[in-house]
Length: 309
Image (cartoon, rainbow, N blue to C red; front, side, top):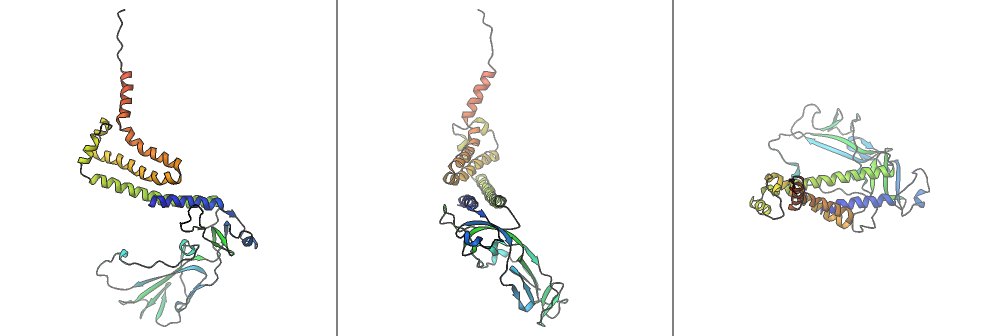
């Protein structure tokens, strides 16, 4: 369940940050002292070997090098991008390549040695001319991410003098987790940023789920709404509402009920609060609230008569 997974990610973040200790990257003996512990570290990237493309005379000190290839061709019909499937790239244990996404364009003026490759305005062309193109000619452009000496903040487990992903003790079957973000951040600030991103991702799924529930309710046969409104506990105020509003209220209650289920497992107190919120819309339109209002109204408009005695 997606809700359960996102809640699990939030709890894993809390465990990771609570176990982390901030260390100084410039202290040489820190790796030995913190072996097997979770650390929070801020420092520059160090690239052991540069990435190179000898055919294009490109060599950069970076984590990733991206190559964009375009072909000059006639387009007779559109093709959806989803029809092309690419295999997932192999990543390191700390997910550095996936997390480093700040790409910089390469605008080189160093011409390649190959005669069939032309350079013009930072683009490399495979063809007879860089200015007059024919069908089948290629245009190539490069960009890179994760420059050397860029400052990054990382939180992970120290193993063998390197930072690795951490496996939370509360979730032994879950994938290991680590934090890596460009810039210098304190431990609490980094936790708030990661938690905010996780919450945005969670609420996107919740909103999408609510829209699906509402759309499904609107497409159902209207007889089910009639049968529901004939229940004895449904107030007359709810019966007078439009069909859209009735479906909207029921969809809100159902969505909150689904959200509450995983929270009842991980955090029962908060789950009980969300579960109570799912009941409130139905309670508002129930005969219980109507009777209470009716009693108050009756007491308010009681007529007083003069006692002849």
